[in-house]
Amino acid sequence: MKKTILTAAALIAITSTASAADIKMTDYSFGKGNYDMGGSITVTLENVSNKEVVAAKYTIICNDAFGDRALGMKVKDRSLNLKPGASDSSTWVPNMFSKSADILKNNKAENFECFLEDVKTVN
Image 1: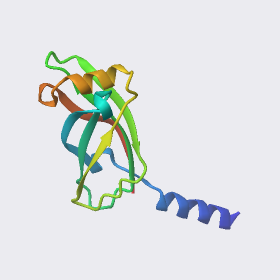
Image 2 (image 1 turned 60 degrees about the vertical axis):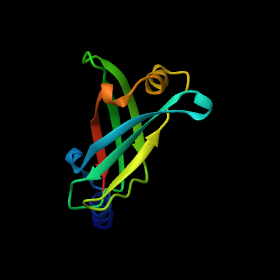
Image 3 (image 1 turned 30 degrees about the vertical axis):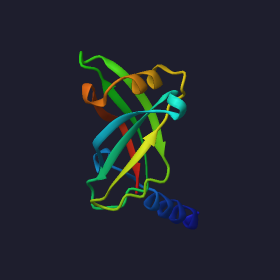
């Protein structure tokens, strides 16, 4: 029993969930998919903590110029591997028939305010 408790405690320590404030989005851009079908969003994330962020899942929210929610896309980056202070860009492609794909394909990112919501990280 004692060995099981120690093993569980060690496992929890190794896979501890970091704070949502460990990463922040510093840039984003919209793009078109292959053969001008569908769209994509590229986000640049920065690790603002003092620990490596191994993985993250979050929702990318974009509001249009009216302040209305135009896009909400849940993503999971299983291999983020961001060292403290480092930045990296990831491109996400929704289903090409979705409303999100249409918005990303036919609009300019500068007309939208995008941010992260429901951020969960592992370090």
